[in-house]
Length: 360
Image (cartoon, rainbow, N blue to C red; front, side):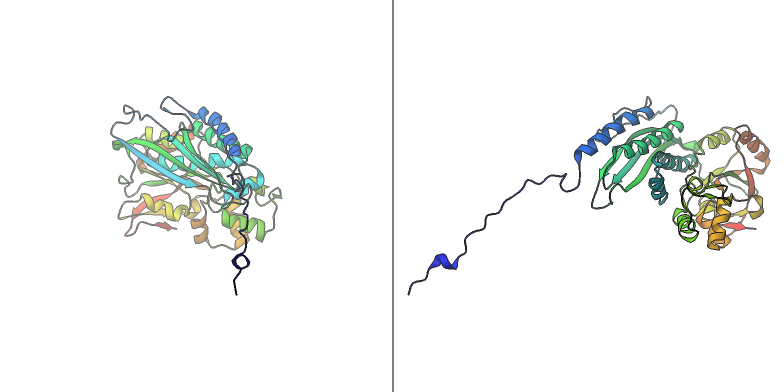
């Protein structure tokens, strides 16, 4: 009995192959090209004579001025803007978030005595919107110009598997320089030095997760709602810009009236002041020396938050602290007042076994 082999082996199936494209996977190179062209035009507004490259190369080129910075030390900082980004997207205030990012990084290098040189950004979205990208980069460029640094380059990425729709993330990286002899490390801080505070504009870029929960979930406010306790609309109160303190820092250094500076960001006074204290010293802060702005008081009421937690979660209206010799306090405050810069005597440097803030 014979076996019919053709009956035992099924016929081969015909497979139709399609030509896969990046766009079908969710990444549109044409959208990216449009966004990048707009970035090139915008970024050039921040260029100066030290920039030796164009936007779009494999890396940015910047010539360091050796005469301006003898024995140069490069000072770098990187950061994001946290959940303030979500509120900015909700309100369509994309430009302001770019300036927040630059100013945060500028302050971080300025308190080391450094001059900001150039900035790099990272922008990633589920779907690139050229108009949003242009607004964000525009804010970055304007802040770079205001602080005398250049937007040297960056990265614009479309990642639909990581971000939803036009949701985006933003981060930045800043490089500055200072002559070795002019670096600020806090080593000159001495007992009796005065803590001189400069006001913040509001939350700056810290504490937004808690603030948004309290204002939008606990209190049930809308972003466009005017609240008497805030003296403003909720969205406007939350979106006040993160200040740059570069100008007052420079003036105080030029007048030779400051030993050190602390940028008050995440962690508040409690965690940021100890970062500049030498061994054997503490910072004594008098709680009655200033009144936090209404936004902070209302947040504390809404959440029944303890003072200790408030001072760690928020800047409480103080964005920068200068450590000033007591004998030079009057001169330092005069320098600031001539800039129309308000200052607050917060306390003083005292002896202490631990580098910490002591509230009294």
